[in-house]
Image (cartoon, rainbow, N blue to C red; front, top):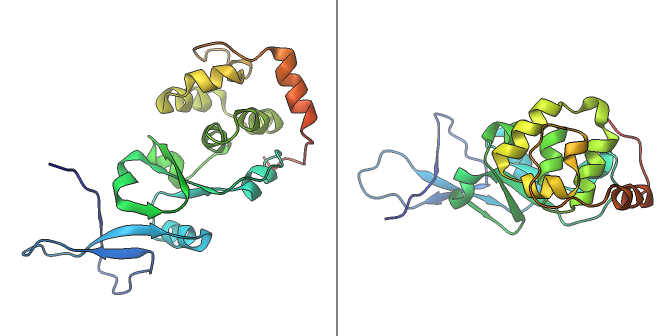
Length: 186
């Protein structure tokens, strides 16, 4: 048996083009849809429809103080994986709320999958806007303690459990210095 996830239409008569009808067994009252994300515009349409997805892109990360170029990646809750078709690389999150309304900490956690040093840089360069308790909770919830330890998140959140070996403090400082800083937007 296979568990599936699908969207169903509400009473609205218009369905955005990002929703693709799925065949439903006879006798079912509603049409099921899978989400097809092909572009940044599709992500915007899905978000307007209250679907928990967000695009981690170079523009967002650069605005947070870490200038970098990388292919955009789609962040979505794990439960939604089977209902989405996309060419974007997917970063699954356990928290639906973090995907619906991503905070600095959530962007940094997603960034751990792309560039761990970049994740640390985002937190470092937006230190005043970071909530250490929320960051601790999210690191544990997403089970990324080892990656967070490697880039020394515990310097920002001393209560964070240390799993594995961290990068030496001097090496991290050198890597952060070698990346030019842009103005951060708390």
